[in-house]
Length: 254
Image 1 (tube, rainbow, N blue to C red):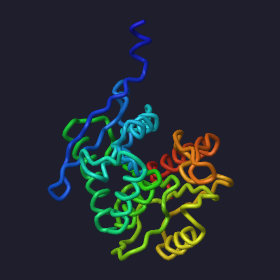
Image 2: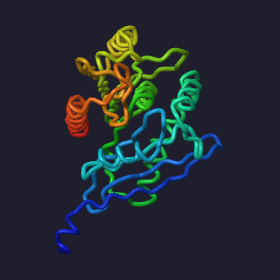
Image 3: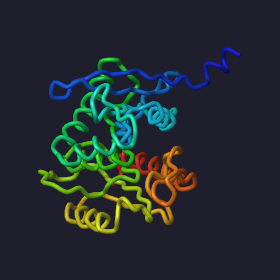
Image 4: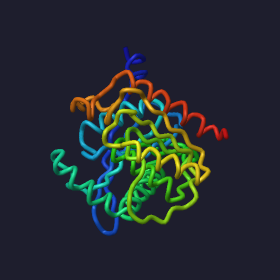
């Protein structure tokens, strides 16, 4: 019985407090402490509801035995939106200031690395990627646009193109965008702008479009018919595509 218990997962979640421009933020590091081998570090930016219980549960599922995951705080400690109305206002304010958005996702990655070092976590700092969902997907794309040197970024049903000025740098991370082809919140104009941008940047990029899928297709709680709906078949495909893409990126393959 003891041998069986030791073989089981031991998911560990630890709050990590950090500062961005003097303002307190709280992220979470999540990993299976029963696995002693080092594994890649993923910086995960949640959807517009932030690092709440549901999004941390999803982070734990993604971490599994494969990754150490750092869940970023894009809003500030004790500033999590209580509902979608609050989330819309908070996200709108951040989208309106792309420099602010970038500073927060960059700070999250830096904190994740510092936390791995300070706590001697079993993460391989030569293998770092960022993934995000909805608002989080847009955030990790902005991380790539900042010239960040992560191996890869993966956006799940995120905004593909943002308005407003931005000092873009050469895109060094491999980019994977997983997009619902029927997503009403990311219309064809955004998709076209993303394609134009990636081509001009000569980035190593992929765009996967899932037929019939709308926004939030990986979110089990999404139930807004025809607009933001969980699609278990597409979610399974998307997570498998993410893993394959990351495996390739971490192996250093072109």
